[in-house]
Length: 165
Image (cartoon, rainbow, N blue to C red; front, top):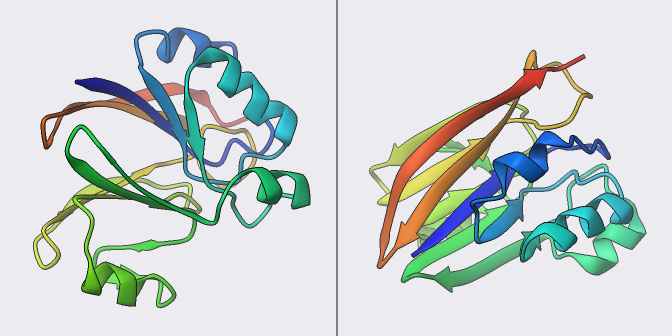
């Protein structure tokens, strides 16, 4: 069993609340637009950290983190990329891979819109944690926590960490 803290679109913003919200987590995952390598290092100090780079990330972040991550954890096949779209409107760049070999859990960022939905066609759970940073059109900063356990994804929590501004 692993408890995961998931966020995206921090755009270089560190919030002390991250330490509190991720204290009970085994790993922290970031779905892109980290904002700086210094910010990524702050997460790495807290917990084991997995991340992908996003469209605003510089060459230092792009050198440290991949465009797409695909891995197994607790018998759950996970795929993370920053710009992935969502069920029914996937990014054409990832759609062939999703159709050919759908993961059990597909995570994206980029939209700043918190969305969790099940894709019946791909038999895949889709998650976008919204945006945890202060830049963008979103009104409330959000993140997700959930548990992976022997092939199951359970106990999903949506956490509002404050207003955007």
